[in-house]
Amino acid sequence: MGLRGRLWRLKASELRAAAVSASAEILRLEAVRVAVVDELSLRPDDQVIASRGVGCWLAANTMLQVRDGKKIAALGAALRPFPAVAARFDVGDCSFDHAVLIVAFCESPPKGMPEEALPRCIDLLLAAASGVEATTTKVRNVIATLERIFESDEIPPAEDIDRNELRIASTLNGRVVVRGDFDALTGEMLLSALSNLTMPTPAPDGTPDTRSAAKRTADGFTELIRRYLDCAKTGTDGGQRPHVNVHINARDLAEHRDCAATPAAPDGGVAVSDLDVGHMPWLGPLSVSQTRLLGCDCFLSTVLLDDHGAPLDARPGKRLVTAEQRVALIARDKGCAFPGCTCVPAWTDAHHIRHWANGGPTVMNNLVLLCRSHHRLMHRKSGFVGKWVIRIGVDNKPWFIPPPSIDPQQHPRPANTTFKT
Image (cartoon, rainbow, N blue to C red; front, top):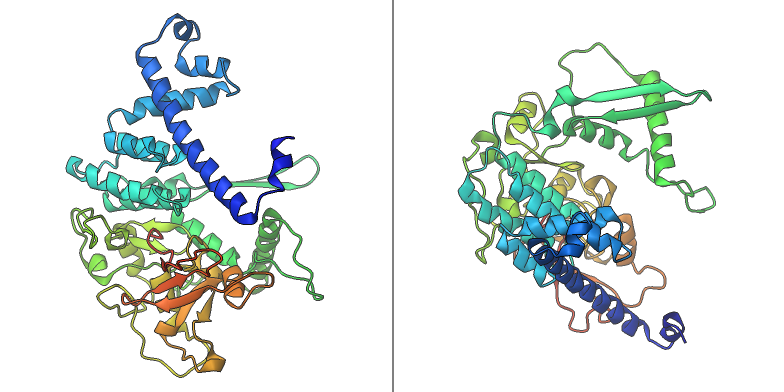
């Protein structure tokens, strides 16, 4: 009886445990392979030399492709100067891809970063790359944030408008191919404009939208152009520009500190939320200099924060969340707050923790941003056993308590906002 033939005997809990255990073992063996290949590269024998390097030798003697063998060898060599990263990778607490991103940052740090700041930056990157909640998006966001913090005289690639390109060409069959490369701010405007136009739209009878994400984006782009041609008013200079939202602390907007990698979290670590950069809901970190430029010609919305960085609210009594409350919720939750979710603010709903029908007020300590999927989950998604509970902690931020079917001890989990910078 084969492997799949034996699995039907297992319970769902046993299958989940087996999947987690297998994944942990894969990480451990991946680290072993990188270390062994690196040691072999330092002491090559005739077989390795004849194979034009240890990466090619590995590919020739396994089912790996040559490019994958070379990546393994390259990571082993790159980890040597950074023992802290190597140690975390060796124990299986950092994936291969995340280790590659971290050492690439360490090898080519921002030009404005002082050498003494590197250890703290490594701690911050390892924090984003460790644990089951680690995602490539979090690691890339921390890297982008650090690149914005340590600004140099050179314009960051993400803000260099001279690199912007848009090519529109017709094909032989009469279609049009569009290919572009834009700075982060232009990308933020484009994604914001397309957000509502690209969401799945069920049919009148409730049938789910069958279009792919790429097809919805194409349809939304078409609608965007149509609306512009129908309704646009062009030729106005100095008009209002309300379509790009940038969040930044007032003290950071006023005066940029020389080294922002110094604030420490209560446990002695580095807190990403303390780093003084601007933040766009779609594309993440924005340098202070670019944020100041936008601040010269914009509408400013003020959100009053407490000592924990949670917004305060003084507008109780209404069922519908006001525009001011939603701005404050975005500043606190930075998107869907459900643990592990990366949904952006534009695709979230304001959920009443204690339902309005049960006397729950529309105030900050009774509201949380949730994407549509997790919003449905909180209202008892069909077929789901148990119920997640949300509580506002002493830090005035939401905490999520899983049902016993997921965690028998029901340990509270913090909102997924730590690395949304």
